[in-house]
Length: 113
Length: 110
Image 1 (cartoon, rainbow over the protein chains, first blue to last red):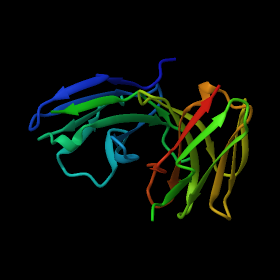
Image 2: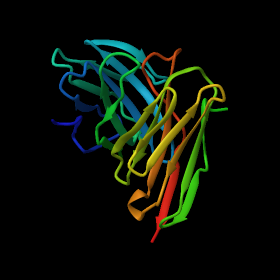
Image 3: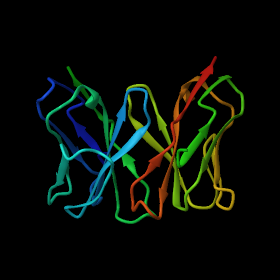
Image 4: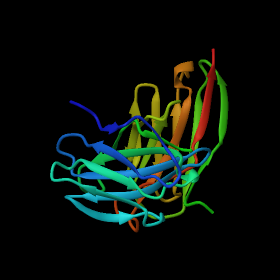
């Protein structure tokens, strides 16, 4: 069974551009979570999608947005990129409900120059 | 103060040593996760706990809900155990999202 897949693995963008990151959850998982890990910092919660809806949002500006498609895959969009957006972006998926564990993807490393 | 505190931040051990990493949290939780992150960033979920103790191979995780504390133990440590170990909690007030500790960098020398 395929794990959580993220693409691309690396992405280099210029300040002011937009970045789109993609995540495919494990088959059957309906929840997708996005996390940011900036250099030298811990993981920070970005967004949670479940059944196509945004369920929760972390303390990030509106230029961080996303969506979940009917097949439960998800996109994270970052508009008007800033240098401090350079980070590892991790996606995780789970079944809905707090009693289920998470499976993490390998991440997309975004570099803003 | 962070909701999730880990100690130590860095840990160096010799191969074969018994290792303990601690995690304390300040919120009510529905579950606690121990994660392993290797260089390059990929994260592996090691354990999800809501009570008691779990064991997988050389790894043991315990949780004390009353004391809001969890420990991750590694027996007979090996250089391949070198990684960052992260404690994360799922609290009742934050829905399904995780709140993470800062991580413990473990280096096991041969």
